[in-house]
Amino acid sequence: MADTAHLRKHYAQLATEELLSFELDDLAEEAQVILSAELDARRADPDEAHHFRKMAGSPFKLDTWPTDHPPLPKGPPYFWLKESATQAHHMGAEREETLAADLQSLRASCSALQLELPQGFLFFMDSPSLWKKFRSVNGGFFDLRRQPVRCPTTHGYLIPFISDQQYCHFYLMHLTPGSRTYEIVWADASYTDALYATPELFARNHEHDFDASDIHLCNVDFEAFMWNHYHDHEKRFAFPPFQAVD
Image 1 (tube, rainbow, N blue to C red):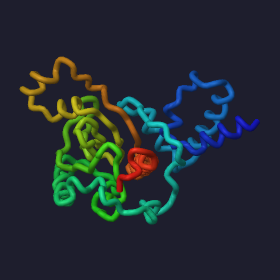
Image 2 (cartoon, one colour; image 1 turned 180 degrees about the horizontal axis):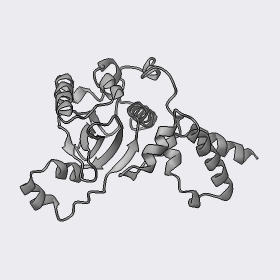
Image 3 (cartoon, helix red, strand yellow; image 1 turned 180 degrees about the vertical axis):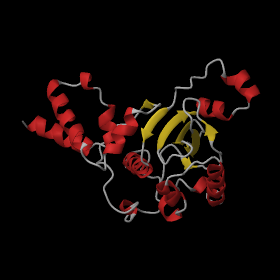
Image 4 (spheres, one colour; image 1 turned 60 degrees about the vertical axis):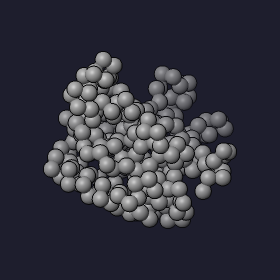
């Protein structure tokens, strides 16, 4: 009984995207029953229903990283950052002098392509007091220099917005012209380099091993993505060798 209660509590704390990433056939029968009940409850919740619609029809591989923190709490945008400290080595530092201009240029490019950037994204990127609260254990930083590029598996566009320090791993936003829906995805450097390559460079350096499907869905809500990012990285900063990092 205690194990059942613990499992029920564990599933209740996970984000919907994480619950949807479980394969029922891989779970014990009792766990299948508990997980199915939690998913059914969330399907009936209007605030959660969009996750099921988006995940079910996503053209991307599902790749949500397991977490041990609760889902994004309900409240005003980014209210949960109110008591968080401003970081000396924050994720905006790398492009701090040009981030506002980069955002303005990106907004113009998206407008020309009939792409609607999410309000939660715009509010966050236009608020240094928010993005200065984020740090990254792999030197990740906010980078809005690149313009929208066509996605090879959809009718939409991809926009990189976070890069790691070595330019090996990227988080991107996927937008579709004329639609307010979007996805947060990730891809590695070989994928993003191929996206932005000229036809000649693509043919020479990427065509022989480029897999257009090698792109992974992380989230369908920008604030929820940043909530997960914040807690995942802060948890890792609490342990050596990161304890001394300010």
